Amino acid sequence: MIALLESGLGKAAWQTLLYISVAWILMTSYQMFTQTAVTTLVTYINMLWPQLGSWLIYRVDLIISVCAFAWVFVVSSAIPSIILGKERGVLLQFAVCLILTFLAFVVFDILESWSASIDPIRYFLGFALLLKNPFSAFAYLIAPYALMIAIDLHGRRKRKKEMERLEKLTENYLQNVIVKQNVQE
Image (cartoon, rainbow, N blue to C red; front, side):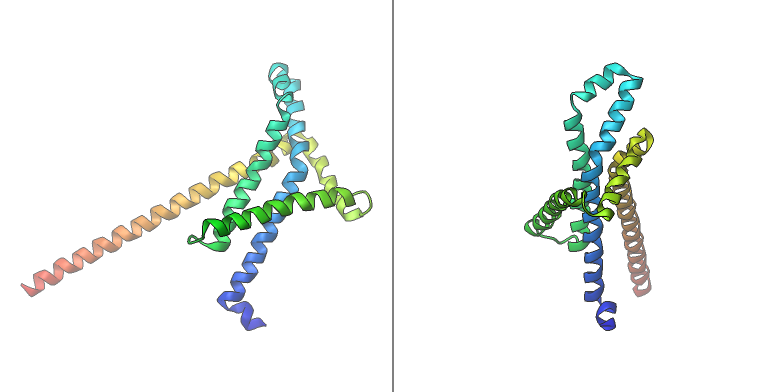
């Protein structure tokens, strides 16, 4: 068993399970708490700037959809890339994304129906009270966008380092070829 965990296959299986669990938690919790956070922010904006607040109140469902989609997008695009690697098929990525999204909706419905009778679920859903603060609601809603920016910046830095490494390797190779040609002459 330990040998399997230490092998590449065991490590990949363990990481896959971890990534899917994190994705499921993020998608499910974001689905549960987005409405509370958006409503808090719109109410706060309405107190500070009534014209903008009233405009946002009529579009609160659209705002909730966009904010909920942000986590679904981040998780459903990042997790399959991590699990399946760069050489993944579109059909396989679609299946992973669809399963993650479906699980988020189903689990959310189950948790809501059980919340009246099971204390740990009621306790978990109680975290929505933290989102009654406009600053924590804003931080909560901005998190997937910050993660998208971080992923993009990390990818750009990684590509830049790889290009620099390849340029240095090419330069060293060309210098070695020139030295060998000079020695042969």
